[in-house]
Image (cartoon, rainbow, N blue to C red; front, side, top):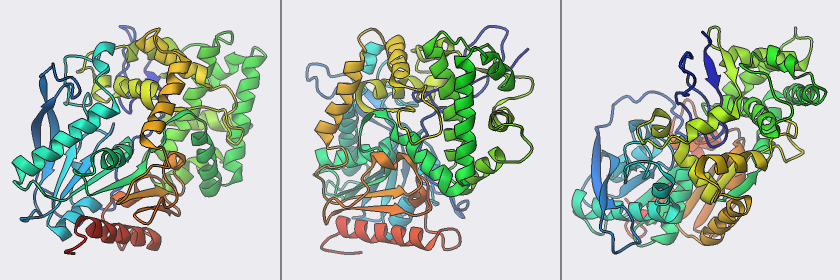
Length: 495
């Protein structure tokens, strides 16, 4: 019995169970869109008293004739709260709701301790346990969009002010990373009376239909931390793989990479999917912990001596990391589509957010990784045709390339992309993070500043200050964040 390991594309979640044939064994898989989570320096010396709560909000905020409501889940940490203290609200975006987002090892909880604040983390509608309606059908997913999410946040802030702490004028900082970072900033833009300030840590501020700069940014980081030889090995391996398929020798890849089925060279989508599996397995694995040393270790493995060819070196690394037991690697696009068409909210893949985030990518954000840039090592076979076909087959014929492109343009037109008009917001980025090309990288104005932190990947600024583990520049950025947000929250009465 073979273990089937399925490595998914940009739409697919971090950890789920592939539903395959009845005689197969299931396995966890990767997605090629990295979820951003706070980096932790050390385990917390004192666990925060974090509780799970729910509040009631509307299913459809923009339909006055429909009064249906639902219970939105959130986490609460009141350990440091004092009367008249501020509220720190972490917006999870597509990140799973977890106590580690607001425990004692995070910078927002450190701020709360200094300012007498309360800390909360709000789960996004349709993710995790926050399900407004029965399932994830296309009809129901129409209620999953930025406007509805921001309206949920507005109701949440009002709930916190009025019901939880009893102060309708409490100051509020909204925080997020990745998609959550964008949502935090957009909330500050749309509801300035409900949020005094916003912090976007490695946020995805600009929707991008063809996100070719991700692989370009990854290549920059590979050279910076792993050396030119790391880039060269990967470049050669991918181009040799392309040539083997082109001349009818795909069976060599089938054997070297331990694939479950041969590659159909006549099926462009299957070929594109195969190369996306190779590309995203490397990209995800190097970025999985937000740790530069982990990234460099992958390059060390790929550049080891003793391999006859660069393809052999890549195949060895690939099999060592993703093959389990006597398993083989599934690169079947049809299996992917079948999994993403599951509409049950309790299905393991949907608890992780696979189908939900793909829907948001197809209808609002894009962020599809391609090989359209010439300045990356992964060949030329992963193009937008693959993602259009995925969106169409998962959600229906109504999805077209024009709709997908226009959706991202509309998102940027409505919220401003990386040139938005906002004040009392701050944008932080790791200089080595490939996602930085969707975030604000320079100051927008005197009250909307940006930091690009040298030598860091995503989320380095989210952890509490550590004199032992943080670089001098990272410590300076964290201290700047604390000073700025104290000023934004209490401009006339510093704490």
